[in-house]
Image (cartoon, rainbow, N blue to C red):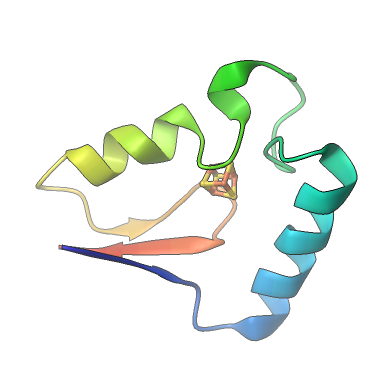
Length: 65
Ligand code: SF4
């Protein structure tokens, strides 16, 4: 299992800027709740799921099996 940044640097930069502006909350979500702090709960659950492979919701990260 490996978690890496999206291979597309432009996407990574846009999401990182969004995270800076939001104070670390997921730029793709409206609610400012602890579960939405990056890495959000959804992606942490996906990392913990051995059958999951793919991008996080914002496409900042990619989880390889
Ligand atoms: S892991 Fe991805 S989807 Fe989750 S908060 Fe961070 S950028 Fe958003």
